[in-house]
Image (cartoon, rainbow, N blue to C red; front, side, top):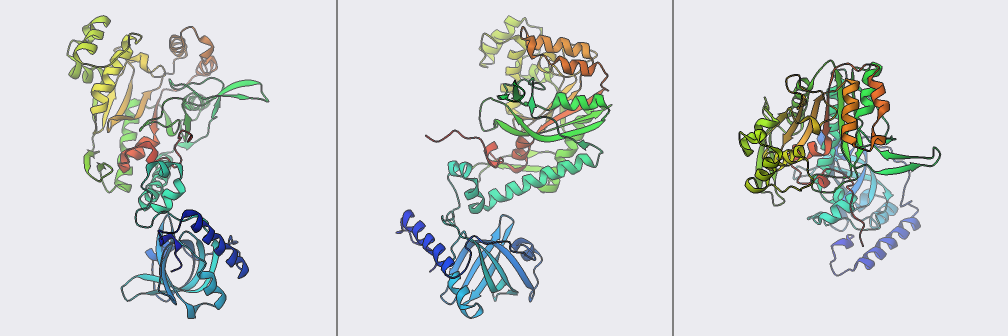
Length: 492
């Protein structure tokens, strides 16, 4: 057999040496083992999907499996999109090409010219008439039966995961298609896609710790953006009425199953709308994605062994409930009539929610929400009208100025999307910023406040964490499964 990978007694160093010998042999035969451009007429996946017999084709791909029977060989060739079977025999190739084939291993990239046919077992195939090596793989592919099962390797060496686990490749293809569909969804509704800076003088638009850097030519400190919100609102002031940005944000905070330091975020703003209209937009978009890519509105989530954990039901209409009403259900009807000290005691002693003495009252209430409500809410729920101290960029409710007109969309125990009726009063915005910054007034973005003084129309705004949304729709258990190259700690 030509496949040295299948000989367990061969050490890795011996295997690498064998492949390098084949590399040298290809050169001796006059083949470039890291070849040049190779025009193709179709791809392996397209050919299989639209298969016809007796058709001349030119395809290229990686060799995934080889079944060598001496003077004839069956093999599979393809890429992340799919594979098709190839067939060659010694009589069908020149002596030089047959010798070159004997230097081919699983993992190599080759170009083929040939004619399509169907085997006696009904398998669509290509009979090879000409073989062109395109890239010699000097290291072996993952095991063809088990792929890459070690999660550490999956995340650190994504290329091995993609070539060894078709389900991973399918997930990332689906992610790309979903993002493209989100763009189309918004563009069909006349939203314009824009780009705003990723380097900011003042970190704003969210409460998070930024990554800090320094611009040498300008001689000034900068931060990587934690959110594009303030720049997108500047565009509303400038006269854009429907805008969105789909790009990276960076937050210098913890890493967990649901958090990566850099993540993809969609933010969109719609002049003359409000948080309720934005909620309808998000509900329609997510359901559209589920029906388009997931086969319906019932989304199964399974553990690593394939056992069903739960089935999420995205059927419309989605639940809407106020922040305070949900907390009263868990903490008592009188919870908001208690004094801050009484609330603290109930939270610690009766609700058994862990809090610190340094927490302010609204932070304690939010801790109750996160631990008793958010983590246990699986089907979609728009949580509306949260404490104004939690959302300094949203419009106050007309009937109760202690709350703001917002929603937080909770699905599968985590926030997927916030949406606001955007604050456009510059005086209120200045006061909120200053209250939030305390004595650190140098962190207040007064330039943004000045921008608001030129007049921002009433508007609704949304953010959607794309990585979390993909987790939700694909059933992936961790954010690292839906980010191609997640941030990992360096190995010792």
